[in-house]
Image (cartoon, rainbow, N blue to C red):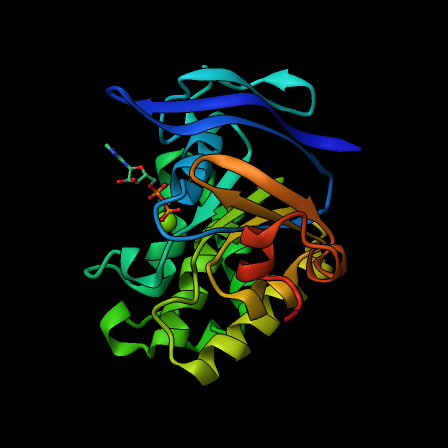
Length: 238
Ligand code: ADP
Ligand code: MG
């Protein structure tokens, strides 16, 4: 079942056309990875889906309902940023609870959600710490926890592992895969790392200069790249 549909989505900044007509249907529970070179529009596309950036043209719908004009908070989406987006003066607990408090959720429900997310991410022992007392990997888990507590239907990740060293990148990648398996939410994940794309994705979407060059399962893309650009980016060595 399609949960998220992009139809002829466009984005211009002034007279620069950055996203130039993107059509994509994403299934409920699907793990979709956007790849493409720096500057091709991956973050811009995610930000439009999240409601953080107005859409210049086309239609975005979730569960069949048009979302273009909806506030970010009404879309049932949570976006995971790089870990440096944590609030430095707040505890881990507060970093995770803050958004829910702002939304006036009752305290016991907030507490339940924060503790459940902390349990999933194995950070319960860190709830009283401040971000600067955490390792990079722990910070990234808090950033993911902040998304989980909102119980979103759709998670968006924008290069969540790019600040981590190689070992932690692998570890956190495995945890994100497990999270997807455990909670079954739809996930869209941006990376320029081919290994992350190949291992995480149900489907890879290859972007170039604001258009989709090809989308398909990792094996389809790897074995049958549509053109030399895709082959050079992710395809099999020829
Ligand atoms: P990616 O995430 O794939 O590296 P981005 O979505 O960040 O690419 O950026 C795509 C293009 O849009 C880049 O050329 C970038 O300079 C441009 N861009 C992004 N945000 C803005 C903005 N607010 N104003 C003008 N240009 C922007
Ligand atoms: Mg980006």
